[in-house]
Image 1 (tube, rainbow, N blue to C red):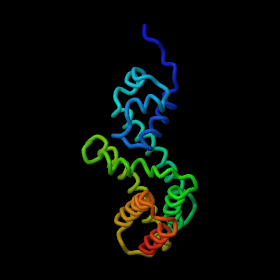
Image 2 (image 1 turned 60 degrees about the vertical axis):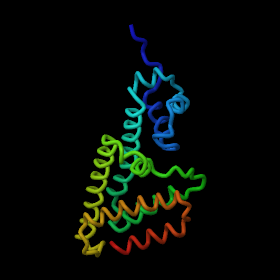
Image 3 (image 1 turned 90 degrees about the vertical axis):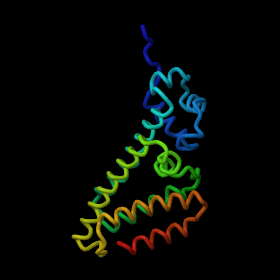
Image 4 (image 1 turned 180 degrees about the vertical axis):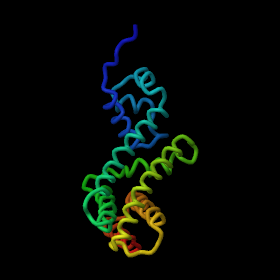
Length: 193
């Protein structure tokens, strides 16, 4: 008879997500995952099947949490322009917070490190991008109809611009670009809306 699990799978998944987020997929060893989760190798492999499966589940959890934060802001009563600026500001604040550890965004990091050679991860990132794009497009279209956003550029193109700007802010911050320069980028991006 198999022994029942003696650990919290959600806590283990959160710990693995942190490990991957800090060092990336390739640099995170199975031993690192054991250390982070407090589990033995057999428990990790019995529960999550493989390092890759664990990574995909951790990435999905990260995307779910980050997207929930974004959707909450996008569904708020703020005008569209303020929602967009708040997204940019949140990115800057996250990257420049006192004690920020420089790990950036797990999605951006994964796009750079893993997606080019891992079709299943690339597909998950593409689905995530599509969901964020649709939500941002809806806010932009609403703002254009209300006159809050005056750009005549297609809302889909502006949504792509916003996602690219957020990713660029995150990468720039990891490269050591300071808050003032990031604020200037955000302000310049807002002029396109």
